Length: 50
Image 1 (cartoon, rainbow, N blue to C red):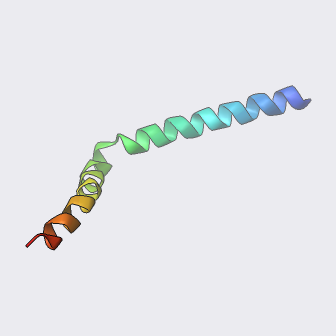
Image 2 (cartoon, rainbow, N blue to C red; image 1 turned 30 degrees about the horizontal axis):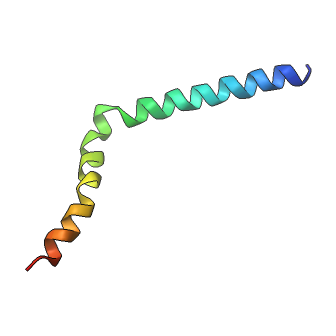
């Protein structure tokens, strides 16, 4: 096993991690919590307005 094999393994592991993050981010199970988190900055503005 030389350095090229380690680079290939690191690239494949990074790609698999990237695909895993994409699946996690776009899963319907997490959509509601991400939508709620997206509205958090606007909730602070509504509280400060008279």
